[in-house]
Structures are given as C-alpha cells and as structure tokens.
Image (cartoon, rainbow, N blue to C red; front, top):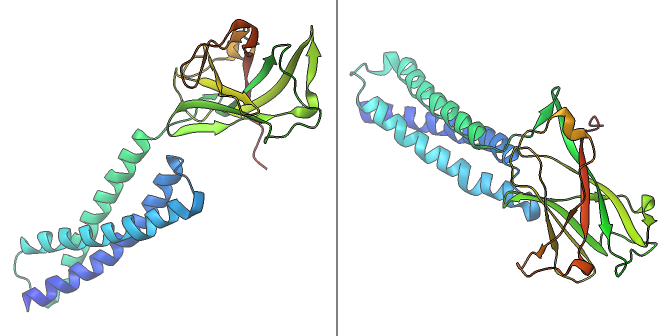
Length: 242
C-alpha cells in the first residue's frame, strides 16, 4: 500500500512540476530573449522543458516520500504537501538563477534606453531615395544572444559635404561594455564600429559622441579609410510602449 501511495503522490507532484516548468520556463525564456522563430521557443517549452519538469518532479517526490515515516493513507495530504513544497522551492531557485543570469537593460531614472545614432556614409556610397531594410542592414551587437536590427529612418536622410547621413535607433537590452554597430549596404560585408559607451549609461551620455569610423569588417578584414562608414550616437529615453 505504501508503494501505491508514493506513486499517487509522485504522479500528482509530477503534474504540478510539469506545469511549473512551463510557467517558469515561459518567463525565463522571454527574459533571456529566446527566439520565437519557427516556433522554436514553444517547442522547447512543450517538448523538452515540460516533460523534464514532469520527470524530475516525479523522481524528487519518490525520493522525498521514501524517507518520510510510514503514515498510511490518513496523512496522504501532508506527504503530498511536502512533495509540492519541495518542487516549489526548486522552481523558485531556478527562477532566481534565470533572473540573475539574464541580460538586464540599463536604465536612467527608471526608464529604458535607446541608442540614437547617425550613420555617415562616404562619398563613394549612396543611399537610394526609396531605400528599404532590404537595401541595408544595421544591427546593434553585444553578444550571440543580443544582436538585433536597428530602425533606420530613411525619410530623414540628409547629405553634408558630399556624405550621406542616415539616422536610426536601437534599444539597449543589455548592460555591457561591448557594443558594436554592424552596418552594410547592398551585398557587401558588414563594417564594424566599436562604441565607447558605459555598460550603464549616465545622463551625460545623452549628448552626441564624437564620430567613430569603422576600421574592420565582420570578417576581420581592414576597411580602407576612403570606404569607411562612421557613426556618432547618444543615449535617449525609450518611448513608452503603446
């Protein structure tokens, strides 16, 4: 009878654990900006994390009830409660670890930030009057998990001294010293511009920086000075979400 009681507790605990794994996993994968492309995040949750939570919770419950004193069916609820509490503690620890290891966006006065920039193209490069994101690719890169496209405002393109100025912006999702802007037009290899920006920007970073030219491409080849893009930037408060 004790074995049947333990199996019953383990099954109920496993159901709760699988559900907790889905809830915590959904929150954690969003926190870590896991891609939803082609349903990847959903399949990870449904096909891996939920079954893992179900199996681990069942095993933990069997271990916990194995060392509980023989109480019979009368105190079934107490033993079930102990198993559920153990699973809840594990889920809480997992959530804390996920939060601690997740990228945290920098803030000023409690508000999220965007990188506002101007990209300067040399005279040998031109921006089509009806340019689109298919003609250009500009992204803000910090690491393999945080590399996202910037928004270019083609309607505000200007020319100065024979050079084309393209304004744009990108959200700052990570507090890090390593921030690079990668830019390409047409089919060329991206040029890399290394930003000199604090991991957590301050209000003085809301002023325009000096121009920073690209010195290398994404394949680490050098960029001739006559072909180099340049960027200047400032930090701005992110607009409120609609």
